[in-house]
Image (cartoon, rainbow, N blue to C red; front, side, top):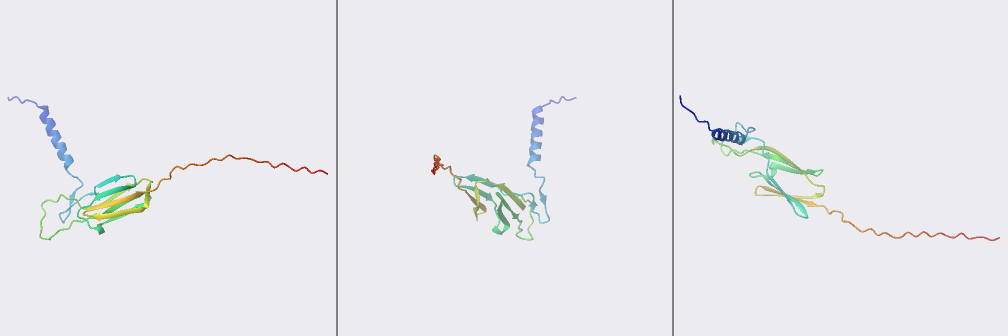
Length: 160
């Protein structure tokens, strides 16, 4: 009979590798007849601000301007669209497709300090730049308080 030495570190490493493998897989990914992978794709967005405005940069590589819409309603900015899989040639056989395609929608609630009328957007090199101007906040103002002086009229006395 052989003696087998138990090594808990080996079992722990094997378990860690298995969990890592399971978490790295994308269970929502499906391959269609065209061979393209479709899953829930959303563009990455950076949000930053300065004293005058808030800026958003959304990465949408390989998309055309007509592939997405940008709306703002009741201080909610919504970006939605579809990234399409474009097969270059019907004779091509894809062995691996790692980029994601499909519809997406991102909604971002904006602070009340944003002026919805002054939103601008530019699309350049696969990045959508959105600029939201901040409203002029009401500044504190000094209210002058005056003394109220009440003057009474003295009644005229009539003599007969």
